[in-house]
Image 1 (cartoon, rainbow, N blue to C red):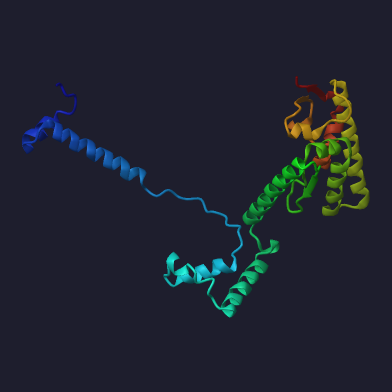
Image 2: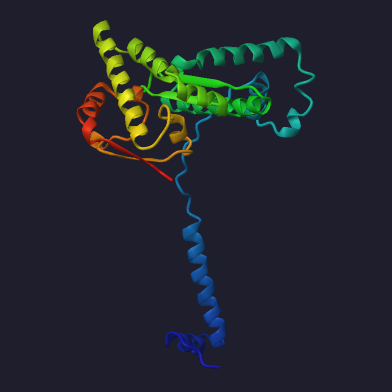
Length: 263
């Protein structure tokens, strides 16, 4: 058998009195061990955001582990714990919950909790829809700079929202309440929103659509519309989601805006 490799291998075999195959195996094992050591170096882990509240039982387990206890020490002890001791854990858990209210949460934990609750709402809306119940949920986050409305609804409720001004009115209400602008300025924004809404409905009809522009269908990707002419690389969305300057820019570019409904 012909071997291809370093000239040092035969020399090493001769010097050690070992067969060349043994030397090659040793070199191979060494290289593999080096690769394993390199790949086993600890990688920086992302910090986890814990959002679940601690229960009295969790606090009881914490104290057991602090005293170097094990899971075997926990089994059955909570059930036999005295009522006074249980009350101490119950009060501590309540105090932690009170301290961890929204105003005390970090931005990361707050966002995580919002996502968790919205996910639960989505599941509940789906379950209600299976039972024949139409549901619409609108939410507005006062701490977000985008001032957008989150919409979660069943199919029938989505059709209703698309055919009315409910979402726009909801957004305008909270935009007004979160703005330091004067009443006349807030009214001006609502007028701009109405004009852009009428413009989009007109462009939608010119492209062959019927009725009002179904914004939720765009979100759900049930409808595709190619838009040209929107200023500053804006994307098509509900008019109430645009800022004042964006609304003004859209109206100024009205003649250049065209819709093309996807097939």
